[in-house]
Image (cartoon, rainbow over all chains, first blue to last red):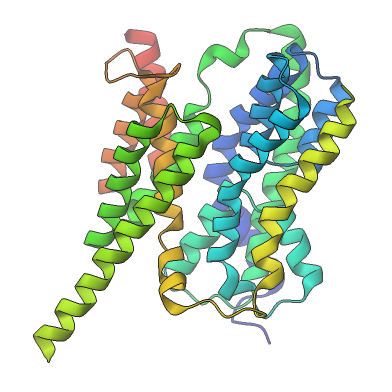
Length: 241
Length: 104
């Protein structure tokens, strides 16, 4: 059964809603292609990584570890730890995929990125009609995937022409994109406490290895938010009881 | 090192954590408090990523005007308090970054 919007409308809307974040990811794709080439990965393997791994942060880490001649197990362990945040993303979307067939869940999982998660979870958070949400998800994801692959190719070419492009600081685009997702969703005290805890904890743990500080800070921030969230509920019950 | 072996292994290690919760959805029942906790995932993880990449530059905490990433993020933050439009927030952030890079 479909909602008020058709599949293709939802698909398109997913792509359109993601466009600011996808535009913000363009410099990242370019830098990845350029960086990978300059650290010695072949052009085909660089493109292959974007097509088969499709995870910006992991790709960057793999390439920079390759550059520092790290051993394969070290690279793989780091990639795995960095990817654990995707498990949190997927877990938070479990209620939305619970009724979908596995043949839809598989590609959705493969295409689950920071950007698509941010846009899809934003739609869920706004409590809009989420029937056919997978079409919205796939629209966002496929737009992201095609742009990411295209930018990798352009980056490979640029890397051969402008070797220092990686030091231009173009990664800032993604950060301001994430600000645009997070800040409008800070509505209650628990949300602000969550963001503040994540920020301060990250500042204290930034020198932990393999981004374990990011995971620790995320768990801590979620715990603080849940505690405050419950307190709000309990105090409301007491006021009304 | 065989670069295609690296890519194959990375694919598996990236896909598995993305797929596990999706694959199990509907088969396992998540307790309500955990479901509630997971709604805070975007705020927690994205804020941590933003902090890591803006307040910390080249492995050091960088609270100064020379940190153009921080200036861009602050401008985007203030904009986001006024406008909820993602495109506006991203544009103001990027313009701030370019102006800071050019002027400072």
